Length: 280
Image 1 (cartoon, one colour):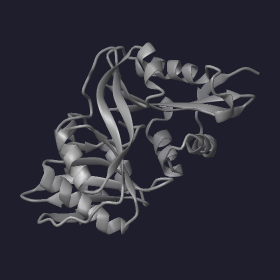
Image 2 (cartoon, helix red, strand yellow):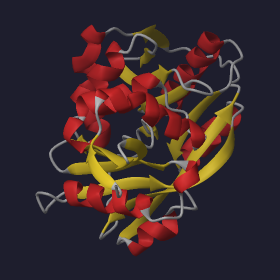
Image 3 (tube, helix red, strand yellow):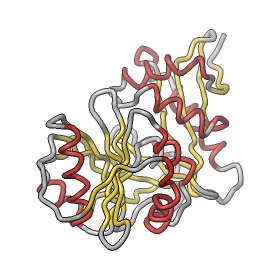
Image 4 (cartoon, one colour):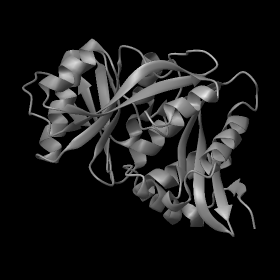
């Protein structure tokens, strides 16, 4: 039986995690379940003789943005074109309405492939990691509950221009994660810290200014107690300066890309860290 693409199922999630672990990614079982729960029609499985050997995902973010991620192929079957087939099927799903903005975050290895598919560069994305230094700050930082979804979603909408309430609600309900919020005159920023396979990952992170970001990073430092963390960060002088000051360094450099023309989606001065490569 040849290579077949169909829908990812709940009983595929363990094998999906195996593929992301092979690739050295940071996904956990909860990350795979979130993708399937929020985007069941966008989760694709590539199979050989009924066995899951490849995946791809199209996440719906607001009415017009589609994000491609989880393009994975079993390490023993790479180089046979299966990843390209998964990508083509994802593109077909993403462009179903014809007016969608389609984005992804590409590694240096994947970028030449995506350029051939019609994607163009938008901005560098840097993966920062290390042990955060504790920071002195004067802002009030609190841990939020799912009841705070409305205020978090409002600030996120201001920062991104997109309503990401379903995703933010899922993150707030994640029993393994926390959401920290900084307050001045009002809500000044928030940071989600979620478990990862190798280390906790902070994202999304939204902050109005450097004082708010510093307060959030300081709270994370106290929470993880010397454990390393990682963040996927749109490159900017402000973000770079703050993260270097906080003791982190760049582990990987990637490129945010969109299809056809450059759209600076899910970016802006208040965006301090992305959610993940799956969600932008």
